[in-house]
Amino acid sequence: MSERTGGLVTVGETMARLTAGRVGPLRHSSDMAVGIGGAESNVAIAVRRLGGSATWIGRVGADGFGDLVLRELRAEGLEVRGLVDDQAPTGLMVKERRTSSSLSVWYYRAGSAGSRLRPADVSEEAIARASLLHVTGITPALSDSAADAVRHAVRLARHHGLIVSFDVNYRSRLWTPEQAGKGLIDILRDSDVVFAGVEEAELFVSATDDPLDLAARLADLGPSQVIVKLGARGCAAVIDGRRLTRAAVPVDVLDPVGAGDAFVGGYLADLLAGEPPEVRLDTAVTVGAFACTVSGDWEGLPTRAELGLLARREDVTR
Image (cartoon, rainbow, N blue to C red):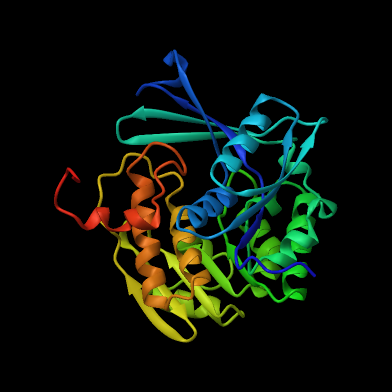
């Protein structure tokens, strides 16, 4: 078996991203910024920027958008196990800033190359070399074959002794709450680390006003580390039986898309680095805050040397 990298491996769809260049209705935008985005690759980039190693497994179309996805991921230092599918296009997301304080996102991923992911696309060698597998609830919602691919990756990870991380990442445009709860419960039970928002957690357990109790109820299903993401209120976690909370880092929010992925990436980077739970959560809320300050899903992610910037009072670093 190949020597382990000590890093993260993830499986999922990364799309091309078009962002309107001005505030207002999309129909009046005369220019669009082109980029990429995807929950799993956002997490992988966060881990990589914080000094870890990361591998992305997925499919793109044989088109310019697919070329862009592969190029950007490689430029960020990821090991890319990307299959090029000449039978389907690369998925697309479009972002509109209708007002200075509101953002809308549309996804065009039905029949995309990423939705055609299948178990045979998942490299056992790449998983065996890693220390942690990260998956989300988005990819299983894309198609039956994509769901099978994620479950296959989880089985391989368990077989090879990896930590399994799962971010529920429920998308209402892809399936109903009932479908998601039924379709994801097996992945949750097979995971060591679970991330969820309050409503996402309630797909699996009964509601409660206390997010720590909510985390504990999820932990009763099997995961040893459960982190409930609370957005601007920070997070609540049950980690190896310990109850912990962290406040969010206050920032001026420019673009919140990708902040949850950044939070996850910060936590997992420090988990891989052997840091204690308190440090993992501190890094998670800090990286999540960074992501909100820049337009783009992942472009604002910090390096480890930059983590202290939000704590400084000076606007200029000399």
